[in-house]
Length: 146
Image 1 (cartoon, rainbow, N blue to C red):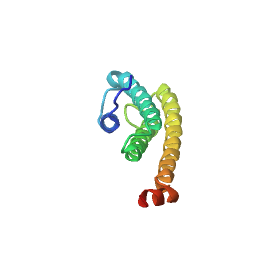
Image 2 (cartoon, rainbow, N blue to C red; image 1 turned 180 degrees about the vertical axis):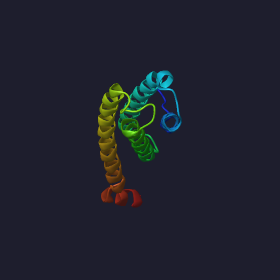
Image 3 (cartoon, rainbow, N blue to C red; image 1 turned 120 degrees about the horizontal axis):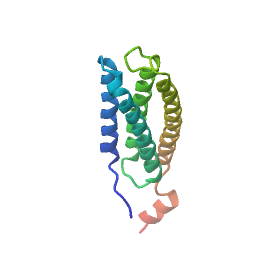
Image 4 (cartoon, helix red, strand yellow; image 1 turned 45 degrees about the vertical axis):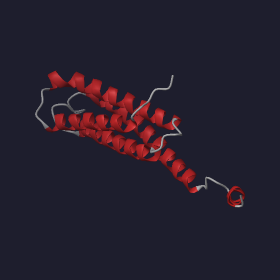
C-alpha cells in the first residue's frame, strides 16, 4: 500500500521542533525538567530526518522533489546548529553540564553530517538529470515530422 507523505509539512513541523529546542537553550530552564525530554526530541528529530531523506530518495515522481531536498538540507543545517549549541553552550542544558548529552550530541552530529552529504549528492544528481533533455533529438524530429 502506497502511503502519501507530505514532505513539506513534515519538514516544517521538524523545523518548529528544532526552534523550540533553540528557545529552550536561550531561556533559563530547569535541566531536571527538560533534559530527558530534550534528548527524546533530538532522537525523534534524527529518526524523522532519516525517514524523510529515505522517502525522498525513493520518490522519483515527486514533482517538487528538488525543492524538498533543499528544504531538508536547510533543516539538517538547523539541526546541526542546535546540536552544536547543546555541545558547546553554557546554559543549563549543555554538554559542559551533562557528559551523556555530549556523547549523544556527537553521535547525532555524525548522523546529520552523513545525511547532509547524501542530500548534497542527491541535489547534484537531480540538477544533472534536469539538464538532460527529456526527448532526444531523433525523437523530437520524429514527433515534429508527423
